[in-house]
Image 1: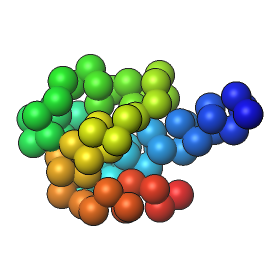
Image 2 (image 1 turned 60 degrees about the vertical axis):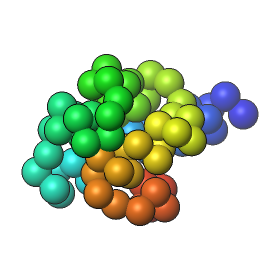
Image 3 (image 1 turned 60 degrees about the horizontal axis):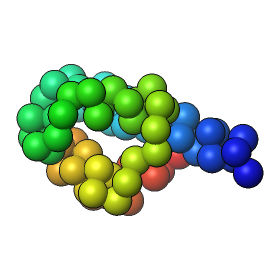
Length: 73
């Protein structure tokens, strides 16, 4: 179970980074639009912790995508 959770966190972080690259945005830009700390964006990208529902919603807002697009991996 832990390996599955780790793999999911990594895939989610890669997807967030992929969307950022597609949109030409930075973690700082996403954090500002999402009203969250830049450190939180980096934690998700680097798979350091699991994103909670409020963070997922904030990231979607910051990336200007629907939350379900964050899970397209």
